[in-house]
Image (cartoon, one colour):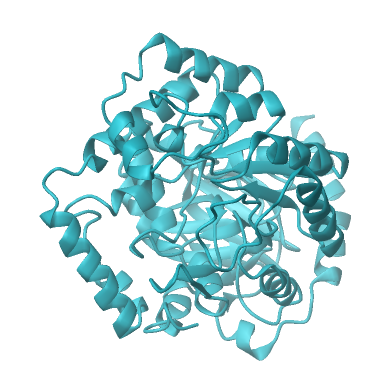
Length: 478
């Protein structure tokens, strides 16, 4: 009876798989250059499955992919492999869901006049090559560029992850970036939300100088359109934003100004004052615990971006040749100079602040909060697209999460927030075959998340080494 039911389940998936195959876009020569596995059916045999749910790793499994979707997952000894399938022996490897990363950008800091250059050529390749199959941009400086890059990826013209485009930053008076549109009140916030919702963005991000009135108007208008709002806030505190209905908060407590003595309503204090105060804050104190309970009760998600903050610490992250090789000579010099300056700052509060952030994130999750993972490839330029995404997962384990929890935070948690957990974020029959094959076992050693051997997106296997090698010397330029 059990075999009969399983057979019915597999048969029910076949029309879906066939439909997906038929709707696959025609891939360009540029995209096909990076595809190493393209077959009607593929079996990943003898692989360790880490399914993204937080459940234990399963050894010696076979994952069958057909028509761009996962057809079956089960013990290798009893796996039913379709006739003619391409069988890949994955002994010694692990497979995890494609990473779903939530604080991403297609731009990179240049260090001049707070200008940011779009990395529309290199970043999609880096993200995909490092195992990111779905990403949400968290604020845009060139929204039309981001939307067009998404269309080019979706149509098969260029390689890259699936992109969920966030609209231009919603920032108020005091905004420092020369590429930002500055809001001048609630009505302008409403107009901006509707304008960019009409253009096709699927989320919005409020930024540091937005006022409570502007933020409330933006949230109300976005929710009318069925669109969520996140925020890297400063003038508005976390509990104020939660009361206004915000869906997501970026970076965590290290940017929350509500605990700063003398904080004035709708005023953004200097960042160094906030960080210095957070570095001394007791995460177990009643006010912080109340804030956490409030966020959890209101179902406000938090996006962790430990990798971008780690770069402000002396001698962190570990210097990797692959990161330096991806940069232009100018970008490399700029980053190494910033890194050297960090080593000279003996009184920097960032080391203590990063530990507090890690404690906050662990406490938030233990209280029932939804934590997601992000890269934020800005800061001093050390957290690059893809590489920084992997580093973020490693840092979650340093924060106290188990490797299995960290992988869930970077996969299924985000898919659930996006409302896409029925198709991405975990490994299960019927889901889209967005998968990452790793050498080793990240459930035992999270550093193995950097050992990407093959990345499947929509059932097609991409060569990560080729993708990463293709952008050598490009970050900071294109």
